[in-house]
Image 1 (cartoon, one colour):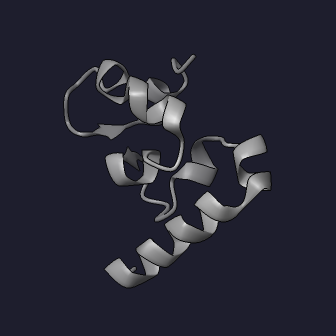
Image 2: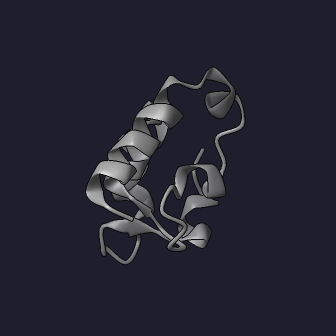
Length: 71
């Protein structure tokens, strides 16, 4: 997926109030690579504020297991 396509997908996600009502791992994993990057997490203010704490292995991405610990 090109950078432009990712940006468009993130903008669409951010503008969708329905997405915020059901923000789950698969919704945030826009490029479907099995992890949530910081740029993908940025559409959810609560998640991005917890990102570094949740990123237990410090690789800059959240696995589904790490994401499941979000409060």
